[in-house]
Structure formats: structure tokens, C-alpha cells
Amino acid sequence: MRDALQVLAVLAAVAAGLWAWRRYHYPSFWLALGFPIVALSVRTSWRRVALGCGLTKKRQRFWFTTVPGLVASTGIVRVKRKWQRIAVDTKPFMWLPLPTRHGWRVTLHTLEGQTPGDYTVAAERLAHSWGVHAIRVSSPGPGRVVLMATMRDPLVKVDELPASPELLKVTVGRLETGKPWLIDFRTVPHWINAGATQSGKSNLANALIVGLAPQPVALVGFDLKGGVEFTPYAPRLSALATCRAESVGLLDDLVALMIDRMGLCRQAGARNIWQLPPGVRPVPVVVLVDELAELYLMADKSEKDEIAKTSTALLRVAQLGRAFGIYLFCCGQRIGSDLGPGVTALRAQCSGRICHRVNDPETATMTLGDLDPAALASARAIAAETPGVAIVASQDGQWYRARSFYVTEQAAEHAARTHAHLAPPWDEITAHLPQPINA
Ligand SMILES: Nc1ncnc2c1ncn2[C@@H]1O[C@H](COP(=O)(O)OP(=O)(O)OP(=O)(O)O)[C@@H](O)[C@H]1O
Ligand SMILES: [Mg+2]
Image (cartoon, rainbow, N blue to C red; front, side, top):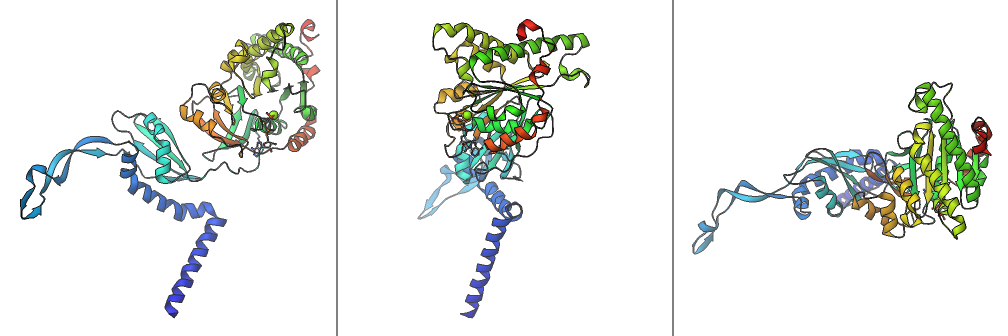
């Protein structure tokens, strides 16, 4: 009896110790205990899981098995077995699983006739079979597929916004893989940020403002919500347009600025402003647009000319801006062709795509284009309880589920006021532009 009590006490102490270890230092618990158990179960269950998910192929193999023709019965049933060549289900070869921050990853060799797409289609079935939050599939090379498993949704809680010391590069959140979510305007110059109302679009713009405010860049705002979003950040903005009439003027300035920089680069024999010596290099301009659709919506015919003008100017900025240090970040609830051909052309120029929670499948398709159908399904599955979660696609052709850091308006306002002295005045930037355009 006493022995039994002692054993129980030891077991309880061990259980409490394990619980505390898992609770207070999950990374070491995962590496030392959780991952080896999971890796073993993944390896041992792979044949069953692959078979269940339709990832096996029939292959002729020598197998020690019963031979129907040789089943002999002499009163007692005797089943004969022998080695023979039969068709057996062969699983794809699996390397040893490796631990990651939020789960594990493993490399597989595809079987003949398989493509990474076959694994993408089976990803949800794999996730359910192994009891993990999600499986993402990528292919590092021909014949190889990497399965990346996340044990729990890492985007339920994301930490604080870190500082962004590199020019035009802002860490705005975290990817599902645990890596930082970067918006790097020098790699991907123009972005579309779409999502239903309250999905976290402005929060992302806030994160960008906080990240860019300490950098030597000019920020320009187009706030078609009548200025309610960006006016508090005015101290750090070099220019702000709050209605369509103001937008026309500001866009004219931006086009003129671009043409001026074109001349500067041509004279210096440079292809873009980054090839100019630092002394003469003009300041990069990041243009933030909130409620893009407002620029295109037409109440009556009289607005047609104005819309055509803004649309053309914005498109020119998108087409030529990259080389001359003018970058676009356009937010909107719906950035679709129903707003006119100008929007479709603008969208085609924006290689950075961010799709927050959407209400209808068309908006996800419009934003993410004809990306992997799994990306579209994932965008539609974003829950209203997790604002800031988005599907991100950029130049590498991959898509990621990500969540922005929560940046309150107060934090963005504080950053704008603290770094107000870094805002180059718009008059200064446009000082040497030809007068008729400026007027
Ligand atoms: N990354 C995040 N983490 C936590 N909460 C967030 C996050 N992003 C947004 N939120 C919450 O969601 C609310 C709505 O976000 P936000 O104002 O950015 O939405 P929106 O898409 O701009 O909406 P609207 O179209 O109405 O302007 C915010 O007030 C904030 O509380
Ligand atoms: Mg908003």
C-alpha cells in the first residue's frame, strides 16, 4: 500500500514537472520530449497515412504472402505462403522529420507520376491524420516535396512590433512558419492590401507607418475616408490628400516628380535612383492609399474626367515608380474590375498581394489572382475573431498565412509625432518641378 502511494506520488510529481516544463519553457520541452515522440509516430504511421491520403502507388515487389492457388486443406486449414512478385502499395520515401519552431518538417521523394500539387491537395487530409493544425507543402526541387507541419495555430497571438532598421524594409508581422513577415519595398515595390471591413487593413498601414517613420523616406497619404485615418499621422506625412480633388493634385505632383527623377537618372546614366551617388539620390517616397475604391467610384457623369485623370496618374506611378523610388501601398475592401479598367491595370502592376478576411470568394480571387486554390480557400477561412490574419503573396510565387502585429492608432500617432522632424516637406521635394504641373 505504501509502495503504491509512493509510486503515485512520484508519477504525480513527474506529471507536474512535465506540465511546468511545457508551460514555462515550451521550446526546450518540444525539442527534448515532444518532437522525438511526434517524429517517431510520424515515421511509424507514414505507410497508413500515405495509403489513406491516396499518396501511394502500386509497384511490383517480392512479398512473402499467401498464394491462392496453393491453399491446401486436409481437414485443418493450412495457408501456404511463399515469396512472390505481387503489386503492393508503395509509400513515398520519407527522410527523418526535423523540428521547427512551431512543429516539424520532413522531405519526401515523390513517386513516379506525382507532382507537389498532389501533396497540396492531400494537405488537409494529412493534417487531420497526424492531428496537427496545418500542413503546408513546398517543393525545393524536382522530385522532392517538403511537408511543413504546424502543431497549433501560431497566429493566435503574435508578439510586439520589432524595430525595422533597414531602409524601406518593415517587419509588419509574423508568418505561419514563425518567420518574420516583411514588407520590403525595394524587392516588391507595389502592394495591394484587401479585406472586408474590420479585417485589419488599417492596422497593417499603422505597422508600416511605425516602421517607416524613423527611416529617411517621405510618406504620402491618400485617405479617401475623409482623412479620418491618416490625419493623426500628418506630422510625419510629407503630403496628405483627403478627397478626390486633392488626390488629383497630389497625383499630378507624383507624376511630375517621377518624370523629373527620370531626367536626373538619364543625365547621370543611371537606370534607377539607387545607382545614383548617395549625395544626389532623391528621397524615396512611399505612397499609402486607404479606401482605394473611392478614387474610382463615380456618382455621376461629371466625375468621369476626374476619375480618368486619377486612374491614369496612379497607373503611371505604379508602372514607372519603382525605378524612381516611388512605392505604392493600396488598401481597399474590394479592388475589382467592377471599378473600371484602371483598377485592373493597377492591380496587374502590384506584385505584392495581401488578402485579409473577405466576405466573398471573388474578392479573394481578385486580390490573390489565380494563385493556388488552397490559398483562396485559406483566405476565406480566416475567422473574424483573428483580425490582422491575412494571406500574403509576393514575388517568390509562394503564399503564406500571416498575422500583422497589433499596432494601435495611438502607437502610430506617437511614432508620427516623434519622428515628425524626419518628414521632408512636400514643397521641398517638389520645389524644382516645372510650375504648370505644380500649380
Ligand atoms: N493584428 C491584429 N491583432 C489584433 N487585433 C487586430 C489586428 N489587426 C486589427 N485588429 C483589430 O481589429 C480592428 C479593426 O482593424 P482595422 O481598423 O485595421 O480594420 P480595417 O480593415 O481597416 O477596417 P475598415 O475597413 O473598417 O477601415 C482594430 O480596431 C483592432 O482592434
Ligand atoms: Mg481601415
